[in-house]
Image (cartoon, rainbow, N blue to C red; front, side, top):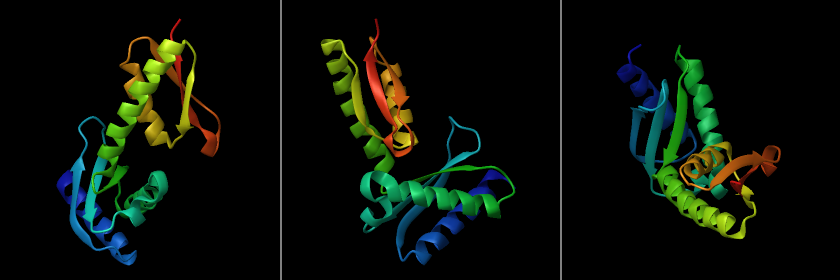
Length: 156
């Protein structure tokens, strides 16, 4: 199946899922992500996004998992689905970037590690990528499960 037909099917499956959840989709799109092979972004716009996003994006992550499982069962190829509602992921990335840069400065000035709040793997990945661009600090994830978080450490 070519990417265009695959993406049309993913879009249809997404809209059907959200319809069953009683969300009316105003706009929807599926696009291939250039930086990752076999990864698509499914973006939707709804009138009331809070129910789909949930506290700190937890509903969004859960829906993404369910949607990925549905797509995997309906399409005969491995496709990683990234689900976004009302451009939440981009706004989240901008917020994280500001916070991480500020805390990295704090770690450098204080000369001691700074721990961030518990985060999803997606959020931690964004933080690690941002920190990798900042001179004088490094990062690592610590903790297990729901307690996993990023620690920003000054380089020696």
